[in-house]
Image (tube, rainbow, N blue to C red; front, side, top):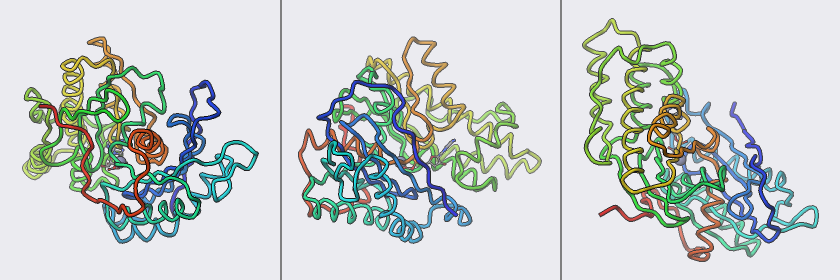
Length: 362
Ligand code: KG4
Ligand code: ZN
């Protein structure tokens, strides 16, 4: 059994611009098959996410071969549903005489090659058959648009803390397409650390939500883990904390898993919040935003708002559904990329190791 989730259309009422282009976004970089139609890079007309969590749970992690096959089975129905909910035919024509689809955007990387290829091949075929422009999107850049989609009045420059299963990045977003990388992880991503510690504690998959659930009845002060690199620069390192957690449990067999989970989570949250706030203050940002799967974490969200309030910084937390992988963020990023760079060649392929498109702070 798998779940198909339909994100509600954007909640904030906005002035409607009839000429705003409709972009179909497609996302298959990991274990979510997703398609969405977004108007003018901001207004979500439809967003369909078919999660494969149940398929991978018994293996304790995403199995690339299974992910690719599941994307292949689901991608066409998911796209068709996204088009239909947005009032469009399977070829992108308006069903009610309104505006037709204007472009097709797809995640080209980073991600699992077999998973990416399904979305990329599908998007290119759709673009070729309909004659619409094709736009390749960097998945990480997509995550940055979660905040702008849900809060179009977001004040820029903003510092975005992007924390997912594969990446931990602090990015200054000056304008759509204009980024500067302020910090990144030297080893494990934040989500990866959650997943590995959860697996070690036998808490289930995916690890982040499992640790969060276990923590609810745990004591965050039970183990005083050293906060890695908390006062040093804006880069991160979580591999040592993961090893320290495992070592502690091996040496203290009597410790309750819930206490370990809560102490580990508190440590990660402290480091993420301290660095995001410091980054925002250092570069004079007007707001701080969260993005990526780990941004669904309740204690992280609460701590970020509290720390922002303390120093007078506005924080924006996208909804949990917008934090985790979805195609609305890909359509939004694709809309801006099309405006700045024009269409991507249909010769372009999937790029599993694609890096974030921002310059590193000098
Ligand atoms: O952004 P995402 O959906 O996929 C990637 O692009 O990686 O992020 C998935 C990651 C996983 O590591 C998962 O454990 C973590 O986000 N995650 C969480 C929570 N929900 C998902 N981590 C901590 N707390 C959560 N509630
Ligand atoms: Zn992601």
